[in-house]
Structures are given as C-alpha cells and as structure tokens.
Image 1 (tube, one colour):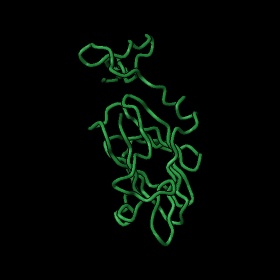
Image 2: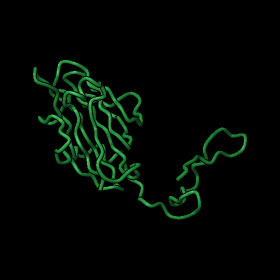
Image 3: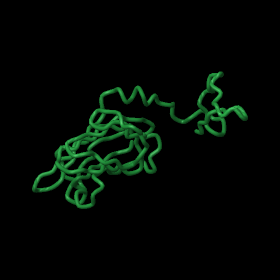
Length: 166
C-alpha cells in the first residue's frame, strides 16, 4: 500500500479538505490486512514481555537458555501487530534483534522516544526497558524463527529464543 499527501501545485501544503480514500493497494484491491491504529495499540498492556537476564552460568531470555530442541517461547498469528516490552534486568546493554520482521520502537523506560523508528534491532539500556509494536503482517517465512541479544557472545551463551509465525 502506498500512502501519500495530496499537495496542490505550488502551495507546499497538503490538501486536507477531503477525507482520505479508503485504504487500497496500488492496483486498487483492498489491503490484505486491515490498517491498525498503532496509537491505540501503544496504550494496551504488552502481549509479550522479553526479559534479558544473566549470571555466571550464561545469558537468558525469560529465565531460559536457548536450546535447539526447545519449543517456541511465543507464537504469533501472521497478519497481526503486537505490543511487546523488552526488559533488561542486567548491568550491561543488550541489543534486541528479531528475524524476519520489523518493529516500531516508541518508548524507553516508559517515556516516549523523541523519534520513534521502525527497526529490526534496538539497544535496551541496562536496568531499563523498551516498548515496541511488532509488525507480523508479512514475515519472510512462516514457521520457526528467533529473537535474541545481538551481541554474538551473549547469543551463543543462551540469550536467544524461538518464535513461531503461524
């Protein structure tokens, strides 16, 4: 779907006098997924919380070390958006990364970020949190994928988890 402002020639200002047309794909078909009100979604409780922790034995997500034979930590329905909170309960920074999808990082430690941005990796400050809205409308591959700390040493020592796109 392509969104654009209609700007009358020479005015430099968007024409907001008419209501915007119903959302349509570039070829005129209705969108596959209905548009979501992200502002409303931001105000909801997180649907999933990722909690980064560590100790002398390794790195964890939600108290679990990654295992190739583990079940997915969470399952998401393709075609949805979800509000997640990533919490860093350690004394060092952890960059959160998820494969196949992107997210809108919009708040840190409960305060709005000055510039919300669509990303696939975000730094989660030590002792802090980041709130994101994940876009599960079009993952590259359906099935199993992963999210993890994007520091290789942390990921390799367990700070990774499976996610199922269903």
